[in-house]
Length: 125
Image 1 (cartoon, one colour):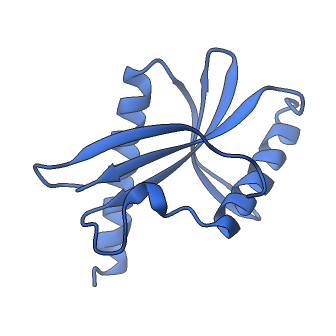
Image 2 (image 1 turned 45 degrees about the vertical axis):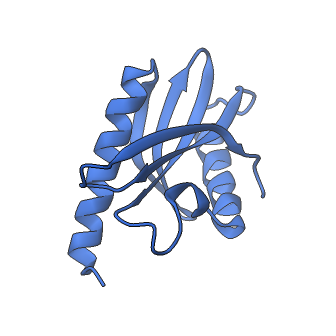
């Protein structure tokens, strides 16, 4: 099992890769690692007038499932609460928004793949 430092380094690498891919696809990165009392959103971006809250999931192996499969219902609810707080704090409560997942499988291997899953889930579940 990787050490906490190794996991954190892998997480940061995954977020860096995700930001690069999002920018390549026309997203403007607004914030990274936005924290509130409810937790953290990895990336907040904008694309085509829509605010996009992005959860980055990276896996080095598929031993515990793919990256895309690893956003459980409790995490989706928490991300929704954090997003609502951000929207209120930035006076954008009526803005169009969505939740995307950037799934990185094989992180740091020659078989590394990055997928952006747009509208990955609705707030609350």
